[in-house]
Length: 300
Image 1: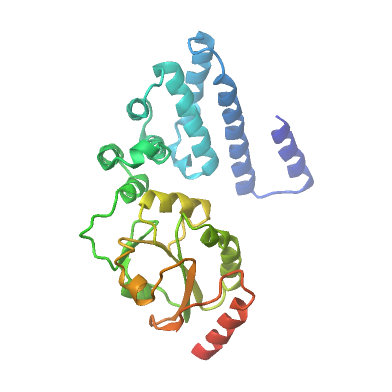
Image 2: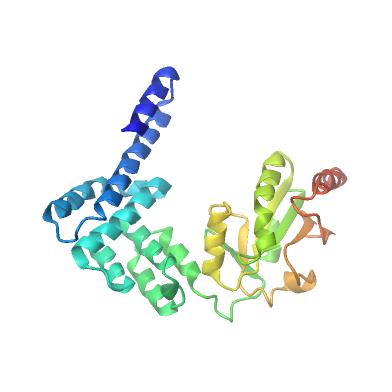
């Protein structure tokens, strides 16, 4: 109520667009539902009044197009936990998957199945279990993201890489997709603390050069695709199409040719894939900005 009152007062003082108003009212509705669910979670499991209240909340999860909003997914996941607690008495996450499959539908069901795998370390290590869940998921994009959690087969071309959308390309094809004078490549991994410490500054660099002919490409040498997916999301690269995972990093030609033995490592290429600087400054290094500007002028 306090949040809604604040928004109503804000709306009176400063007119807002219809979209802004609708989005924020929707956000506030699900924030309130989340609080209610969290409150009910602490009640005894067999309280009939609480169970009735929980089941009444299901009507707010009928519009599955909202699943693409983070606030909705957060509330949906919490709601699935409490319904499972009151209706099933949880013992194993495997039974939680069965419950999700029977109790929810559409995109809600697909997201919850995906989320259940992502948050369960045991399932993440079990390719057969992930495969079973994949067969249960009906639509995109969660089916594709689950497929990415499977370990890459050893017979896959070592030069191939995959992005967050599940699109694969070779190192050569990468430069065909990038229509910029310069390509600043960041070799990193989820487990590399110095790599991830540079990510906030890298984001600022992307913003600084967004109107220039510079593309920022991220190539992970993670061996585990699930670790890359998690780190990718945390670092704000969850929907960035130029964030890639090498299929076989130890055998990848680009890793061998550039001798990427330590990370973070930054390399600047021209539009043809030719190396202009094989050991470029980090995003936090003041030398990077003048270097990129100098190289841009040389490429004209």
